[in-house]
Image (tube, rainbow, N blue to C red; front, side, top):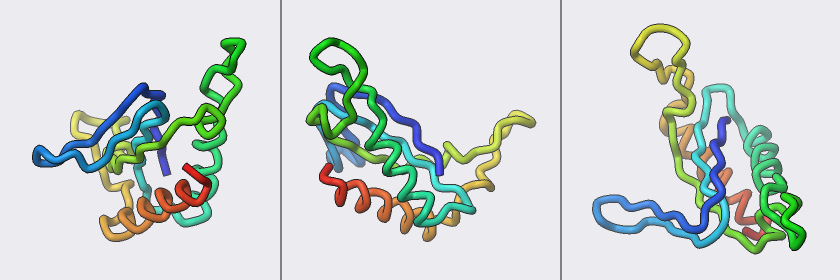
Length: 118
């Protein structure tokens, strides 16, 4: 499981001119699910993403996690994060999980984050 994390002041996802998700300050997480991923890996990644101290405290030191900073999390499925790009000019996405499995693990990851009070 691969997560690309971006601190944001706001973020949104639009599909066919309809906003399907949006947040104010917090984290935008692009999530790629790989073949060998399971719920245990999703749990660990969720803990790490929510625990990263990448927000500034009152002294300007990056010392707060997203919850302590009062932020939100927007998770976006991004299968291309699992692409193999070391050889050739055409990325191979064969390392990604099958669509049904990837969707199930994505939904599990999102629910796990929700359970952690985000």
